[in-house]
Image (cartoon, rainbow, N blue to C red; front, side, top):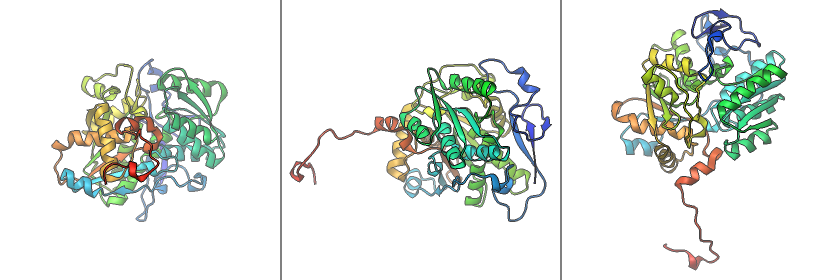
Length: 393
């Protein structure tokens, strides 16, 4: 199998090199406050082996993979939910069971391997929390230095997680978008490899592995996939995995992908309807998908349009209700961004045939943001010392 970079906008091809992040031609058209121009994808060419593995479809050799067990997360068959919803083909892909408890480990794993291959010792990024703690954990396993720019509003659990792994953390008095720009300025001044979502081609390529796993676990392409969307990098990774399967002749179609956005952070949904990205301050309980400017927006929008994807908006109230329902009915405690995908399914399922095979991507563990989950539970105020004080029976 051979690999190269291809520009998602102009189609130019480039060799895979450590200092190439975006298309040098298309990025000249980059304007402030708009998504990245010239996002690069990894192009595969050659024949696939009959006994292909996921590693064989990645552009970094296995000997460079960090020693941490990323991927191979379970695909749940939630029987109670299936019965309640009369939807027997419902599946939950639980990526909260990755080593740092989020799907972002898939991108961090490949970025780390790429850095190891080219002898790069420092990896720099901005994050709302999950990507940062993910890169910190994977980088720790690989012995790499990780420098993280984190908005001050990031959940405390994610900040502590990144620090526990040994990352150097700069808290930014601003939004994720401000942190993103500062991280790019840092690498321009001090060097290192920038892992920022979509900017680094290995982020989309790493995230495609979730689709490859789903395909192998189901033995087929699902009919529909629900993905929560902020920057749009996971969405593009999901598409990339299924596109590669079709390109290699392993599958003959793509699923219908539903991009689920919070009402308070819906830049992609607005662009899907209006055809243009307009910056708007974001605010949602789902911090992992809270962005003003979706950095992979142009690329993600093109994927949705080309492959007839759909966009669904959900409120914070729907997200928290979906989080509680997943916990209490399936036993899966996912963070608000993961619950947003399920909330989108609940909103859209009236248009989906009940016999369809559907996959919900639960992208992170609920313990990453207990403050949000605490809004839908009531912590007992009474403290007891004797059984006689227990009410009920």
